[in-house]
Image 1 (cartoon, one colour):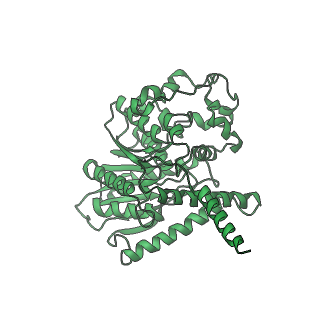
Image 2 (cartoon, helix red, strand yellow):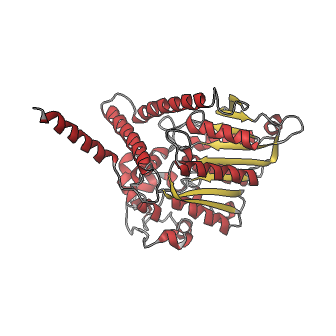
Image 3 (spheres, one colour):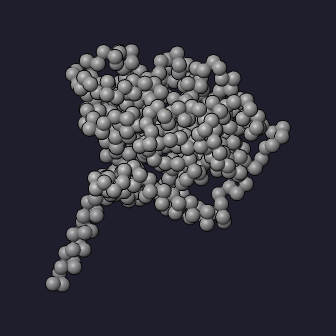
Length: 419
């Protein structure tokens, strides 16, 4: 009988190790920290799916409750470490812009006769998770406001499952137009020549789409002068790019999860996931996906050789004929900014695009950088060879990664020099 506790302990240890461990590239630093984070996130999703199956709650609501609790704990740790608050000189206000909730950060400097920078930030989270007011987003925006003497507006756009495309985009666009109005610019003493839009992941998608719309809107007297996109998600027609295949099992954004986020955002049936993973939704038989449109995300042309490696494009002759009809947003440039024509890109503001080697979205960002450059836009590509998706947000203990701190500093330095 004495062996039983030992057997149980060993079995549980092996089971946990099996659940946690995923082979990671040698270039990723602090691998066990990343594995533990990923295991926690996966466990949260599995528990949320079980609760949804039992009819207890929607699985996104369950995930939010878990992540909100984690963010609250982190906010408490950050507050205690900083002696009661992060950047105490920054004034924070929770208000609305054109009916959209926003958090405004005003730096201690400035005032009458001293114009300041302005920046609108759109958070990530797969259009379903995250908040402008919590966790690392709040910390980063306070830091940016203080260091760069910038009025930062972080947008609390609506999320899935309460809404889907185009509502989050329209929320962000409405808030952006309000922010760029001469009245608001004057109220916050913002230099209209120094206003940026930025975002990470799904927020990078929204930032790119909003930047395109504002750039081509002749009724706007003030426009964004720069855009900063942190590992943005930019297209939903090819889920077999080299980065999607190379990094399909790399934490914390696995390939099936990104496809699921897309289906949720576009209001589509999740049963279509396997069709999208196989690129059946973008087969050659779809006449509305023209050769010109395909060329706008042809990674065989747009990616540098080091990222193409030996991968070959997956082009399906005959796929699911109804998928594009069932998911019309697949071809909407407001959802997929990479599909925008060169005449639109040529009007866009100069760009900073951060990409990570071990991220399924790497090639989206690299292709967009190339297409903007081909359209005559000045682009700074900041690529992290040891980076992974989400690292930009992992900047505080205990989820602090060196690559995250470097990525944040690179972003701040670029804005310091270009905004």
